[in-house]
Amino acid sequence: MPASRKPASRAAVLALPNRPAVALPLPSGRTLLVAFAAVAAIVGAYFAARETSMFAVQRIEVTGARPAVIQRVDAALAPLDGSSLLALNTAEIDRRLSPLRDVSLVSYDRAFPHTAKIVVSAERPVAVLRRGTQAWIVTERGRVLQPITDPRESDLPRIWDANAAVPGPGEVLTTDEALRAARLLGGVLSADRALFERVREARSVGRDLTLVLGTGTEIRLGPADDLALQLAVAERVLQAAGPGAQYVDVSVPERAVVR
Figure (cartoon, rainbow, N blue to C red):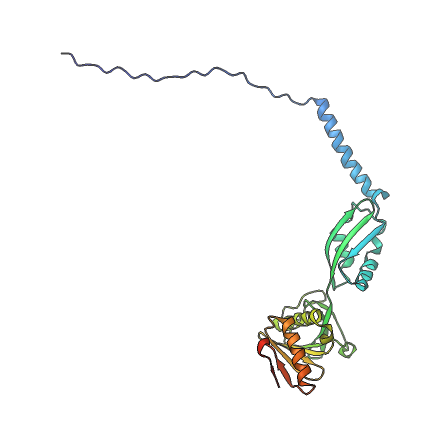
């Protein structure tokens, strides 16, 4: 018997109907010309407004600091009156504020047509940093304001650090002990101004912080993890102990020790 043959396999081909290509309409030369002219007109109007008095600065609103600081900022920014609000930028404001080393720009916004709104932050001087015979005024954040020739002219508390690396005015201290002492004094000033005015010296040894009052009494704070509570406890203890207290240790405020 002849061998049976398998039917040959055939590949099925599916023919898709040809679809006509869709031609997207291109803008005409006239349309492009009108669009470019409109853009050029807008750009030209912007630059023209920068050079005219249409948006001249007539009012500068400064917020974020105490009235005395705002007066100094107003004086520093007074030359900007009449300048273009469109041209005024943060770099120019920073340049005007740079002589005020304790003031920094937080934000700047325009309130058209004639008002510039500026928010600043001012650091408070809290200490005289002493290194040998040299002295500098420093702020609550450890920023160096300026050197002083006669420390006796200032009633601010002292920070003594013979090894302090003191940067130039406007820069922040990098020595840990001096920086921590300055920030401690800033915290004291914020928590209890009356106590701050009685502080003669701030010390930082390792993680332990100490305040020395004008009477010679020490307030030992340890790392000062809960400064406001520790200061409140120290005040209560000192009131009960009287003026002869040598020190009060409130590093653990729940177990204060006085001598």
